[in-house]
Image (cartoon, rainbow, N blue to C red):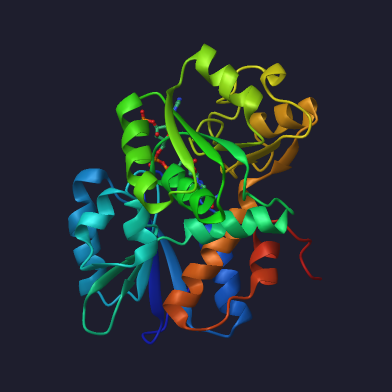
Length: 289
Ligand code: NAP
């Protein structure tokens, strides 16, 4: 494949990245808008993150997406944090501006909110459970706080990570009661029973661990609940199938993937994102023939 010299470059930085649909989705978006841009997936280990970000800037990349497990650590490497990233303490999008500054944004927050909206879920006043306390959980909590959720229980296997996330959110979003719970059967089951919205922000169920689910039993879910699984590879995770079995409504991770990607595309290019083409590229809409 020829990449002409005037091609603008963006990269995905994470570990792993082999599962990612972002290269396909952004390639379709650049094509749809007639832009000579390319998107590369780069596996970067944690100990190499600082050098990788400096390298991308030195090589003249326009920007980057940042994924698991670097979303929190990358904030330390940015020259400026947009409020979307500062509020969460996590970033998924970098823009290398013309003066050479690294500006960090979090488009997962808007992507999560837009996916809920697209599925007709109004998070204002809801009781929610967020599983996980990493970068994606921070984005979900910020979006739920912004929407005015009534209560958010953050369930994590490292209790201090859940508590730290809640402590960060409380002063930002005073209408929402954030509390931390351990990832143990008893508290998890009680929290799930009460929740109107359940968000999986852990990688449990992601390829190659398709057989796993963060919720061990479909009986712990119920009809009338909304179950949002951020994992999108495979699109129908074990949790999604369990939620359907329980009669819950499902929001899959692909919708968020497209909307966080659309927001990043607009930050890099300044051009309106071709959301339909991006949905087609990830299989959310049938491809045009
Ligand atoms: P992360 O920063 O590494 O955080 C992962 C969280 O999950 C941590 O709290 C981790 O706990 C927890 N966790 C991992 N394995 C677990 C297990 N077996 N049981 C219980 N908890 C476990 O990763 P992230 O960036 O937040 O991403 C999380 C997932 O969301 C990934 O699958 C990612 O692809 C997906 N995601 C999807 C979208 C989308 O657009 N659809 C956007 C963002 C993220 P420890 O700290 O104890 O390890």
